[in-house]
Length: 434
Image 1: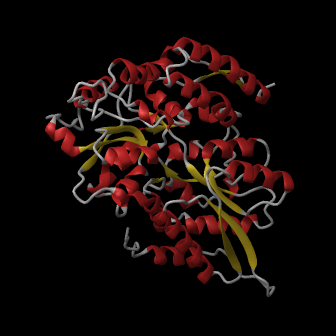
Image 2 (image 1 turned 30 degrees about the vertical axis):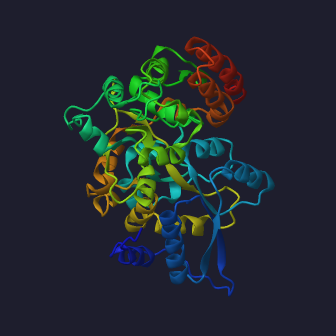
Image 3 (image 1 turned 90 degrees about the horizontal axis):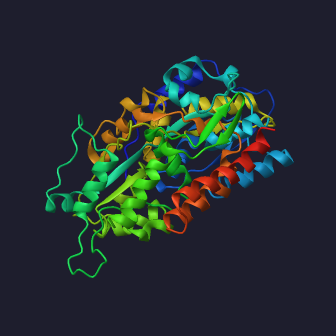
């Protein structure tokens, strides 16, 4: 997608540099910073490379080398890098594993290095995702991802389904009711031609953890300085709702049990699913890129349980403690995440910038492609208890994801799911809290 460059970003960048970054070197050889990026969408990669190129053109004495790593391998890549002490100078990741690495002593505390302007502009909730109990900051949060509901306008109109109003948002029970109304089995063969919704449920741990927050579900309990896994009534409510839609109402397709968000999109565009609930705002870009010209779609606000709150994981830039050039690395981060550049990066990724000032820039204030609704959804992002737990990444990958797969495939009862997740999860978590 062609995107206009934000006109004044270069002016801001120049002002930042003129404010005394002090990058001049007396030696002839420039400092070389290795920057690991996880950008993967076309626009996102383009935006990151433009920021790096602009920095390099302005700073001949401090050059940034761009390195692409994918989300599937970054955890192993960083673990190996830290152990071998062959680290990148700046890396892109997300807040939960970053806090885990920080607590294990691998990352630089950025708190003393953060410019005052950046500290004040980035939303307080985003800072909470990267700050430990002692005030150490292990990453600069720059992107957040609200979960929204995508819907097919044509199917809604044909079924005469009214859209929720801003002052009367849908609850999960409303979603269930509407999904039933939109499910159509016209030939009565027991397999609907149109399902009310498709929820991508492969590796669903993050999705379930974040959406459960609205029900009051934490999946963890705190006792002093330690944590334990718990799956009680509040954690079960979202799960029981999804199970009812899958197997009682049969309004939610089981085809999505083994699919991620990107893999559900073709069925959504083909009119097989009227809604995609609980998907990340970034999915909008793929809709725009892949949809037929006459496909009409929209974005609905976050669903309400007890509240509309969702758990929040921020994407971050961090500096390893073993970086040879931490000062220069922080100067690059300050440039890359200034007001205009953060907006550029967020727009490229179709996510929401954490700077309040960045959200005032285009395209975040247009209704086109669901931008305004997505930005509004970000105000419901909150800092969940599970974000504070060391070992939660291992718990999610080794226990929660596989148990959710069994649960949603109807091969495990909800009560047995709760017992097994608690028992096996606590075996992992107790290693981190001896």
